[in-house]
Length: 250
Image (cartoon, rainbow, N blue to C red; front, side):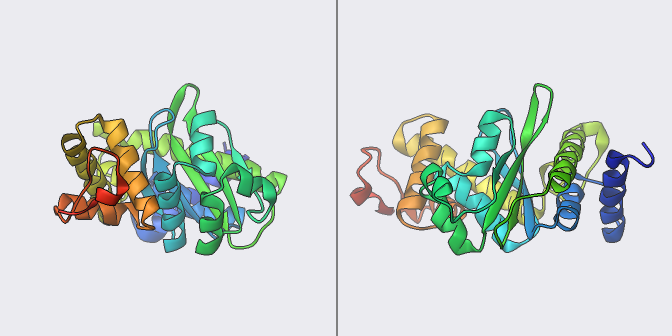
């Protein structure tokens, strides 16, 4: 592999891990991709198949916000990449095509500071592990060389993510599942717990409960994690009759 493009990419990922003094993980592939592909930030969503999944790693606050927006709204380049199994490249979010394809996400993403987003599925054959998202604060497409590198970073992240889920592999980058940082692991736990509580409150299944959770966050311009935290703390209770006017404090 020495001298090959995959070998060069692996060297960058290993160098990122060495700089923080840790074992190589998917988080390092995410971080190393930012400089190599010349983007502003990146994130990783872990999921099976076309599921919404959960946020595993981010390189900055804007990346975290973009990832959570797509989870809340259920639309954007990353959900499309997860569903199709192929890359989704939005090089200019100010174009009409982006606004018509993702009418809720596009203006919110631009307001957050993103001008371009590139979503790369984490997959090997039939195995789907999630999506790597990259964003730029200025519009513009990836060059053919940058896209080639980005795809190899995504492949590397896929292998490392799957390896981190092997109990024999030990811990990766953090104390959460698969080496997930503690704060993101807590957010994930709160969303999962809130969704479970809503199944009881609403008398519905997990999928419908999560849809209601997202809908409430979107309708009230709130972060999904904040709504989940209020539900878990019993400060907020959603009503089973789908009447938004009845949703409110417990």
